[in-house]
Image (cartoon, rainbow over all chains, first blue to last red; front, top):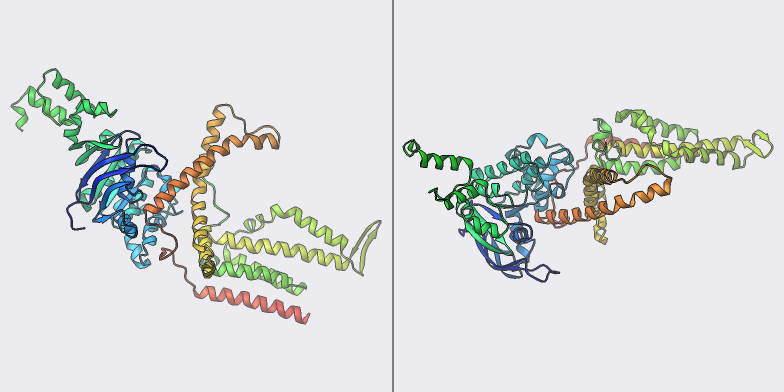
Length: 285
Length: 267
């Protein structure tokens, strides 16, 4: 726990039982406390496999995954790992267990054997952290996709985790639901210092992370801040990944000789940079 | 059309019967079923009737809801009544022509047997109308937990019931969606005889089953990732508590049973 990494992967390979080739091979990475790390990759790149390795749902075929100081290989530490590294899945419907929101949030606590009196305040604070306390007595099937995902986050939050791993948690949501969930996660990351591993194929979501790991064909191909990663437009395209529109535009302008700085991701960045070039005197303000 | 379905027949109002501990209600319902078979005379049936009226009044459930349970049984009731009426031997002949012979004894036996069925149905309806399915699952888990000694999966059964209840609306919604998708491509679910319509359901059931299995595997993974490891060492958010009212309810039912036994001895 006291180490300066939350998750350490060392030469990790993982092969599914029926599969002929490994889903991940020779991956090493570190995730530090309080970091918001986006794992980016197209379908079948191995990014979901990586998520399941972090939660001890998969055990690496080779190498080691250490989560909060616990090696996922040791069978008797599995529950210690899972309570510290909570996981949110893609389909909001398939991860809610109970027929009432409050009871679903309680599910993890019940499993951990937390006494009932202690459960109630923890559920309340988890639900208010994701702003779902109004819905505590609602039936989950009455909620929108974004709300269901927030309930799922509350269910993990109640277990007081150090890490939240989201495996394409926004892939099945509409744009407003996606924003809802993303805002909630960012808020938890900032205010509670919870480490976030955000697995996604949406560039815009990855652009908001502290650090991006790009996974392709079972290994980490690029690593760095969003600005560093998205400036490598050609390499990203080779991996069938897009870059944010502004990063692509900046890249093309640079190719025609416009001296744009590196790391342009959003429209605001672009406006500021173009202003700086066109009227250098104003940009100081 | 499927969004406002109610699960089971739970009638969610507040009443003294609703607030009883589900364990009390479950046990008392079983005792009541036995008690119904103890009644032999008018006095006994009168007692049972009085008890049902009392329980129904206290439960705030409208009479219409209580009688709804009898509707599917109407043919059984009629047949029971008629068979007993015509085929019970007796001495005091009331009506007699051709092969039909109705006696006083037969009439009362027919009436009692039908009443017995009515009481059974209404008594058990009272349980399901005033107890939510989740509470019932909880009660079953606790009441069956002594059987864990002989490896009876009490917790697993209750967990399965709760999950099934949770997924009923989800799967209904999905069935609706698949049905509409197939109707849009020309499938016909509404015409033809029973067999044709049953056959038309096959292309609906196959994708529904496939998706249910996928959901089950997703859910199992989600549950494991939230530290689910069976019933051992598990605490619960909902704690069932016996109150004074539970005691009173037990006393009332005990009195009913005692009176019925007395009736059997004395009359």
